Length: 252
Length: 202
Image 1 (cartoon, rainbow over the protein chains, first blue to last red):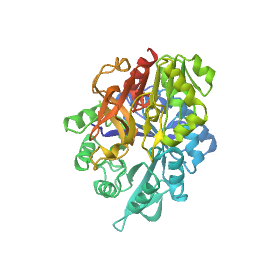
Image 2: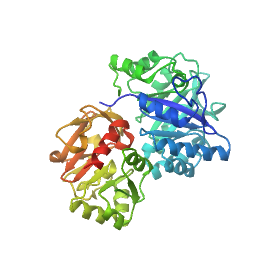
Image 3: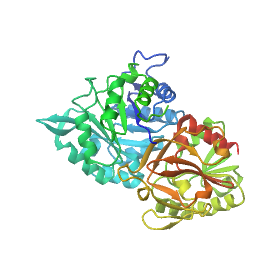
Image 4: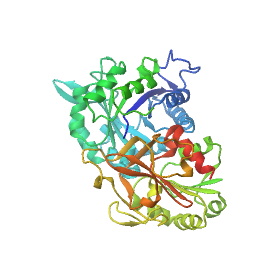
């Protein structure tokens, strides 16, 4: 039986992990390579590297880091951040990424998802969407959640999966950072709309929130989080044990 | 030395690194003489069957791989590389494979519950149906990483491992010196590395 995936997300700026302080037992807490190795051995099912670098120089450092990680960590690796063209897909895929996550790049250039899917296959294209309720409507936000695009989120997601997006990361701005649990209402609306895998992001504060997620919405395939893993608030091994105890398929 | 066949399909970086991490040397190559000298061959593959099969042929790799396998050199096909080992694929039409293992590649939508998602993507458990040297370091029920929408059918006598996804899907095959895995061992953590190590030690 296929298992529910647990995915830590690492924000990388100038070759270092942001939000990586106080991490248990690691010498070099800011090293993306060290952290990736740590998560892989702790039982992470996949990793997301998110490049939040602005400079061209930082981008080169990022691809070097990616290469070093991919040569030592043998679980699926998704890369996002700064993906605006098929050349960007090519750049990170050559460095060992398995999937590429697009967000603002797809909003600016709506043909990007389709072009990339034709070149690299649907399984390679992950659509990441930052969604916020505005007057009761799910709206797509761009530029790291700062800009309301005015687009209705479900319609946008449907359109992108039609073009070939193979997975959807639903990041609820409404629940992100609040640590009160995933946005079940938003996730359910997305699951109703698409048949590709859906990854929940935003709101996880403890193990219980993952259990609730997978029990309430069995159609959600994976849970993604960053700081709770980085700060050791949730240990992946404990989370997986708890999932198993609740009858949720997990890889241990 | 292990030759990873380079025919312009997919990302071979992880595969090369995974072989290095189990202590063996791998060369990504499309050079006939290098492949002839290699001890073993890895045939990777992602994307659509038709495109990949056409590229394998156009680069001259189809003949080399077939010829070397027929001489008895161990060959491991991975994901689409495994699917190409069979006679035919019915992915968007009907396409010829290498014919090294009897069987056909068919859409998983024909056999699984319609409520399940396609592709079959994620970590799933291996269930062994017969002994294979490839799995000598792996226990029943260990997890490997899958991404596929088509599966190998009509190949019962070659199946070594199955994965349950609304139906029992072919996960591993073996026929003499020719091996195949539908999952990605290079992306399947420790379990995948143990499988690659066993292949390198054949």
